[in-house]
Length: 381
Image (cartoon, rainbow, N blue to C red):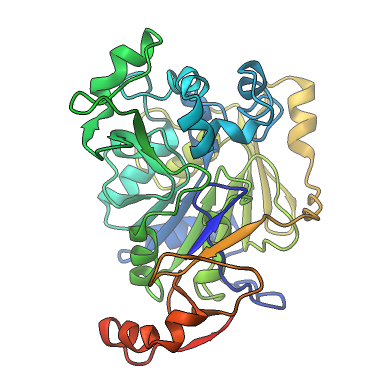
């Protein structure tokens, strides 16, 4: 299992080499509507902070996002300390100041959340993998959702592990009191994956269930810079059509069959109108959908300011980051961190299963095969 020192709960998958072949059947909005109208369509959604911005939740990396505005005001030496488990144990106050806006009861789902709830209601949402911790997916009624980084729905005591609904802690948090356990007095923490904590095993479980059972991948409101969302694209078969819905394009290494650029709510209002879903608040006539490149469409309000329109005209591809995240691996048998100089064995059939050299030689690979599948193979990673 991989634990990331730079991003919460990160995992790595081997990235395919070479460019994937773009789908011939998905080149336009008309094609996308046709796919979503199929009676048995199976759609997997990878969602990020962009789907919650209109609900009042700031994203992380934009100029007005959490890392550039909220984190510096809390006196942190670096913004990542806001979600660092070691810093939280030392001083939980900055996190709880930030958390006031995310605790249950203060937010409402966006149109985009409701769109995917409607998709699920029609039996076409195979799974929704979200990086978001605001819990708006469940609040919207989406059942087939996997919170890759946890959520604020429940909180746990760091000492005795007792859990409580986070809503019960809301009063303390809103008045600036650090919530503590009513049983042992330990520090309470929302069930959110912090830096230095491993990702919940259910993410791997659902990804393994979904592999080979997907007709369409939709990536919405994310920069794909945080694992595991950034790696999930490489987990699914390369011939599965992929759609990006984002304000801006992603790096050239992220290939999509169709790119819908604009605010998520605007894009999905247009799409729901094209699907005749009658969701009452679909896109007004002033919203323009314009083809700006091969397989690339821009969505914006014709009444928007000139600067906004200029921003939306940008279709350049950002440069690929030059630095990699520092990652450390943990043996799934003994739980020990695997040294960078130590031999590590990875199960090629699993999304996230690693063994240290000692456990591999002691027969843990064979026990893994007995427990899961005799065809599972291990290789040196």
